Amino acid sequence: MSGGVPRLRGFTHVSLSVKDLMTSAEWYQRVLGLRVLVPPFEQDTYRETILSLPNGTGLCLQQHTANSGADFDERRTGLDHLSFDVPSKQDLEHWVNRFDELGVSYSREPDSLQFGSMVVFRDPDNIQLELHCRRPQ
Image 1 (tube, rainbow, N blue to C red):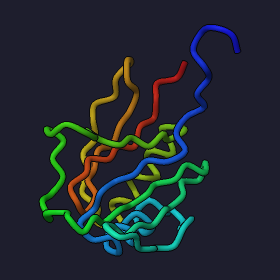
Image 2 (cartoon, rainbow, N blue to C red; image 1 turned 180 degrees about the vertical axis):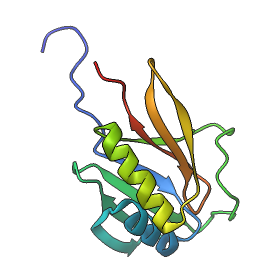
Image 3 (tube, rainbow, N blue to C red; image 1 turned 90 degrees about the vertical axis):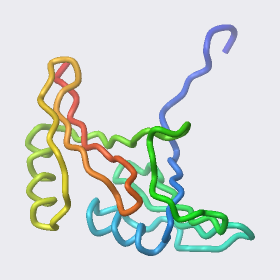
Image 4 (cartoon, one colour; image 1 turned 90 degrees about the horizontal axis):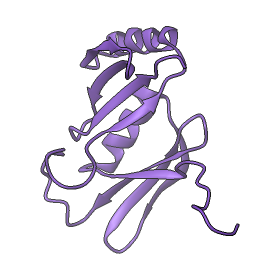
C-alpha cells in the first residue's frame, strides 16, 4: 500500500491483570461462556490463561506476582472499561436474564439514539464490563 493508513481488522486479544487467575478465569467462563484457548501457564513474573470469545478474539488474564491485590480503578491511567458487542436488543435481554439467574449485579443504562443499549457489570477484580447493543444503522 502506498500512502494512507494501513488497515486494521480489530483486536486479536485484550489482556487484563487480575488478582486471582483461577477465580477470574472461572468467572469469565461461567458468566460469559468464554472457552479456554490456552490453559494456564507460568512465566517468571506472572501466570496467564487465554480465553476465547465466540468471534475468536482472545481475552488474556494475567496474575502478576507483583500485583498489590488492590481492586481495579478506572480513574487511573490505563483501561477504563471493556465493552462486548451484542448483536440485538433481544440478545441483550437474554444476557439480563442470564445475569439474574447467576446472581450477577448489573445496571441498565438508558437506551440512547447515539449509543444504543447497554448493561454495565463488574468482574471479580472490579473491572467494569459492558454488554453493548449498538443502535441500528
